[in-house]
Amino acid sequence: MTATMRTSPLAVAVAGRKPELREVHGMPVPARFPGERDTWKATIGICDVSALVRAGLKGPGAEAWLAARNVPVPAAANSWTHAGGGLVARLARTEFLIEDGCDDVAAARLRAELQAGEPGVYPVIRQDCALALAGAAVNELLVQTCNADFASQSAADSIVTLTQMVGVSVTVLRDDRGTVPCYRVWCDGTMGPYFWETLIGIAEELGGGPVGIASLFADTAT
Image (cartoon, rainbow, N blue to C red):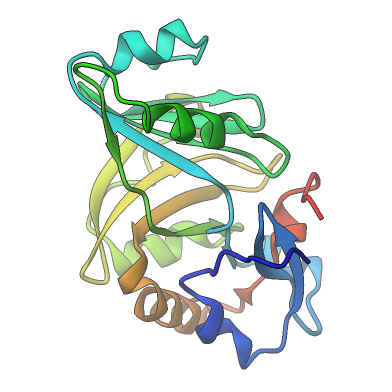
């Protein structure tokens, strides 16, 4: 692992479960948990993906700034699209979230460029706790934790939902892993430990639990 490490908002919360750690974009995150099996696909697995690098920006010039850098921009607010192994989400008419996959560097590059300053384009600091909720029972967890109607959405709808789960403000989108339903969720990093522990408790009641990033991302960097 590198000398200078980023730290997940969930580092302390997951430590007691003694996961196998792997470095992703300079952050140690659980690759697998002891005794982890693929049976979570039939129930629900909750994965810490906070290591994926994000860039946020907003302002009247944000869309043109991204387009000039060949970043695919969703046409409508509250929608998203894939970009390489990562994604681009349009959170409002002039606000965007870009997130890299395990092997991408686009968000990191954009974040560096934003520091130079650009009229009408303003960086948004992203210090997220980021989770992936995946498995056949994922909608049962969502029904218990959130009032938003996710059951009527499909991955093809490419909808971004800003709502609350267990009292925490979250951004949610559906991004299935093959045939396995999967929702990506971001919240403020300071709320991460509470959010994680609450969702893990519900997932375990449903027969699931925590899973490592290697279970959801075949291209997990080392």
